[in-house]
Amino acid sequence: MSNKSIKTITTAILALISLFIGSQYFDSSVENINVDIQSSIEQLYATRQSGIMVEFDGVVVKLLSDDLDGSRHQRFIVKLNSGHTVLIAHNIDLAPRVPLEKGKKVFIYGQYEWNDRGGVVHWTHKDPRGTHEEGWIQFQGQKYE
Image 1 (cartoon, rainbow, N blue to C red):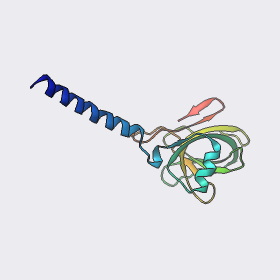
Image 2 (image 1 turned 135 degrees about the horizontal axis):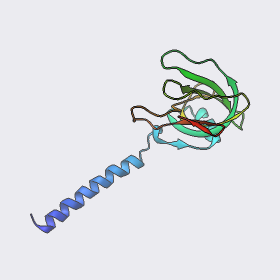
Image 3 (image 1 turned 90 degrees about the vertical axis):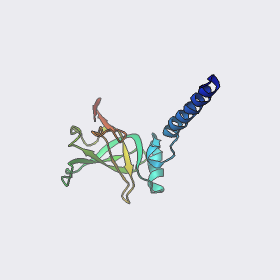
Image 4 (image 1 turned 90 degrees about the horizontal axis):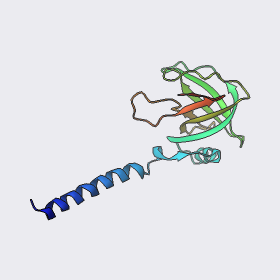
């Protein structure tokens, strides 16, 4: 095989690798869009979008009973600075329970799902299968994931 053939094959392989890597970073699917400002949660709610990772903070306004149907979830409602409220469903089979207090600030990174009551955020934990972006909840300086 000549040097020119090797150079052509190498260039083609590098081009394919670049295309593959580029497609991983520039995937325009909704699931890979991260939103990191609170006003965007209202926008997601207004446009009925779901499956988007969001990072935000708010105040715990209501502690709810755990959802025990299937995987157990700690549930609570957070109010954003804008007044918008969102339900948080934190999987306590995969992550530690957060010792929340009503009226205290909490920081959250998880997946937003639209519903007509303001939306719900879940995936606030590590993914044991390693196939989903991992989330977390931070409360009083401690991260729960």
